Image (cartoon, rainbow, N blue to C red; front, side, top):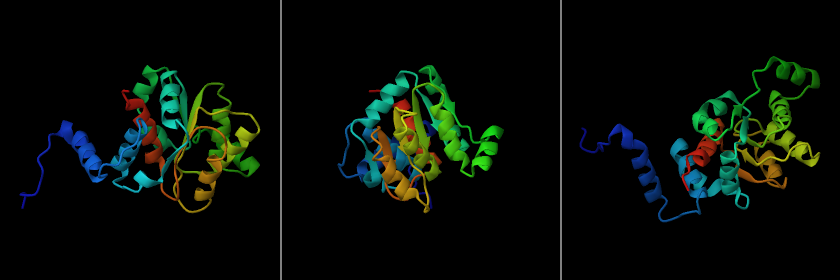
Length: 209
């Protein structure tokens, strides 16, 4: 019954997983740190579609790494994405992760303005007055509001990770952010999620190059 089970020590499971992913990619590769991001997204999701749908603006991954090492903050649109980010390594670089979704004033303002809390959260991030990477894993309205803020010259993100998942305005919001004129990492199409947004952040934090 156990003949086909590969015995792998707990500390070596991730390493072995990456070896399998690299092998199944069949020789495909990307310049680093893009390759690390692609592999980690596949590792998180077990979905090899990320080898084809992840889109990087020119030098985006390296720009994200450099921003994090300067102490850039990360603003997420969900507590799940926020929870998944390695905040210890982020803090070692002088950065901090923020999610404003649970703030009472955010909920109140969203209700008054008849918009989503995610849109208000992006405004809060823009108002931090710090270098910011926006990691969006759920709400296309967050990307739409970010696009507007960029056009209004109210924010100049170091990087936008645009990874909302779903059906309503998801594809359109991703395509919009890819025209905003700022660095982006976007899984084109309907796939993504808070776990993918956090994974991309961590891939840049973990990269040793």
